[in-house]
Length: 393
Ligand SMILES: Cc1cc2nc3c(=O)[nH]c(=O)nc-3n(C[C@H](O)[C@H](O)[C@H](O)COP(=O)(O)OP(=O)(O)OC[C@H]3O[C@@H](n4cnc5c(N)ncnc54)[C@H](O)[C@@H]3O)c2cc1C
Image 1 (cartoon, rainbow, N blue to C red):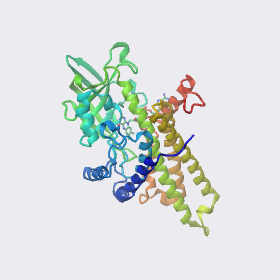
Image 2 (cartoon, rainbow, N blue to C red):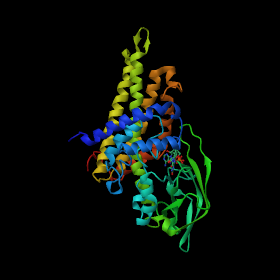
Image 3 (cartoon, protein in one colour):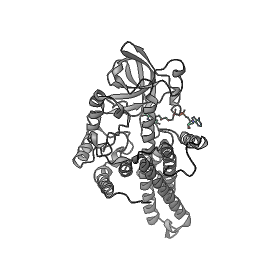
Image 4 (cartoon, rainbow, N blue to C red):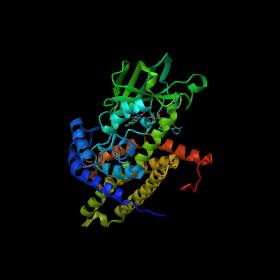
């Protein structure tokens, strides 16, 4: 077994670290609590990322990307996520992070949608969740009905991140009849351009985390059949692939943020004195630091293993659920301990920890709650799809 990280990925991680220190950290005081960075700042950072050869580092080489694979993507996101500037949210300053759906489009769709996103000229968003419950997206009520060569879509999506900035939407709707109108069957993915009559923004949700997702309303939205990605009724497979990669990426984002929190906790413990000695000399504080380090290290091993499986072309669905569950819950505990170690200052808005705490709380729900991850993991075990001693099978 070899735990070495390839030299070229180490160099990539080092350059990403420098970019974060030099370009992003100076912006933190102003933008830490924002859901997005202003367009002009994003454009400047993206131009710098392109200059340094970072842009689209994670996308396949055949599409002009850096082709660093899942492990490389994890290492870079770990660095980006150390900073509270929302540069690691979709789309990041290094990559459009568009998800896998558009790679399944036909040649015309790739030309019109995929390539401009990869170049950074267009933005997109992923619209699956509805009022009926994000945990059970197959209960969706948004429906498309065929009308000649066109489809007419009616319904409402909620919590859609960056719906306001998207030049087009990747939306999942029900197209089946009878038995296909239930469960995973009969779901289809459409691409809908901004400005298409009948599609409009609704409520802008204000959450405890800095995120500000949108309600997206479809009223008799008429689109040609050429806007369907893949086959009619096979959209669930596309959504599932998107969610699987999203869960894996939760790993490095939570690891990066927890690393920063632990580093701050260690610095504070060493310099803060009570009763004549640094609090770092107290066992109560040392145990919190030790527990955080063990959890962080476990999270890295779990994440890099899942990324390695993805890079080998092996199924990583069950691993991605474990990554999301463990890393997000680990981040919550690590940032909580870091605040405890800081005492009252940990609660201050002058320090980066309180916004990280609010973000950590949100991560236990977004892109599949902790309960859903446990359901996936247990479901695979109980049905025999996955083994207790599963490692590289
Ligand atoms: C900041 C943010 C950004 C988002 N961005 C997007 C986006 O861009 N696109 C998109 O499509 N969606 C997005 N979402 C939606 C997100 O994926 C859902 O909020 C999430 O999946 C949870 O769904 P829900 O909020 O409807 O909770 P529910 O599904 O209603 O669940 C409520 C609670 O019940 C639990 N629960 C549900 N079913 C079960 C069960 N069978 N057993 C045990 N417990 C259960 C859940 O774990 C949760 O604790 C976003 C959400 C947030 C908060």
